[in-house]
Image 1 (spheres, rainbow, N blue to C red):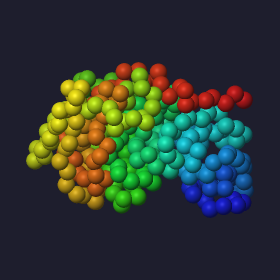
Image 2 (cartoon, rainbow, N blue to C red):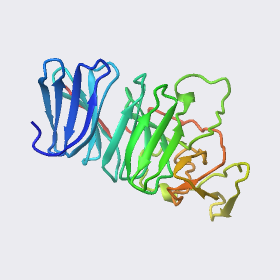
Image 3 (cartoon, rainbow, N blue to C red):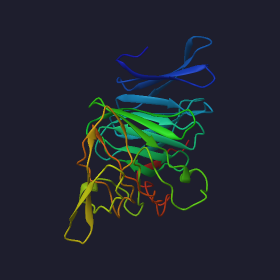
Image 4 (cartoon, rainbow, N blue to C red):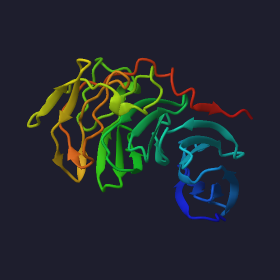
Length: 278
């Protein structure tokens, strides 16, 4: 019943419903048992991705309007909208198996990890040099995998310190870099202008640092080409430091740094979060 191309489809965990998203601005919830339409959702956007919440009560959508929308499955009502990106479309998203987080990727080439209930960004992942067109959580929720238009795949380790209290304050990341976002700065429009902190050197990898005017150092980690990149780059708080965005999408970075937790997880993104009253 879509009048345009179908861009995404997802089945709920109970195999009773499916949600299809289309670039015609419609998203349809289908009853798989009765093989009929249950709800149809409309928005002024080209829907590019859709995902069921684990309990099946809500779906998330993303598209050309750069927003992430929460929809009630029962009545098809829009309950919340988040500004997913200030610059690019939201091409892909996924929800963690426990429903605590979701992850987005799009034309801004940035992986973003969000708290589902609060609608706030907790971490970002930098490194892709092309449009991100697919992102997924692993079945255990410990890893995130992303793919880009450059033909590369990145494996990220989901920051477990955000899920439960760790034994130590620092957690080493061995597979991917997710930069913890400093929520005193709610946008990422000027990431490349932010100072970068020093990255630790990994074995068989060298890093060069150039002194900046403000006394901070910009990280220039060495890289080797790889079709599937296991990344362990600089981890910093956004707003205080960020990894240089000029890294190659096909590069393999090897260094380790302790994850820096965001100062105030719930203090930002509220400007881009709008709750729709029923």
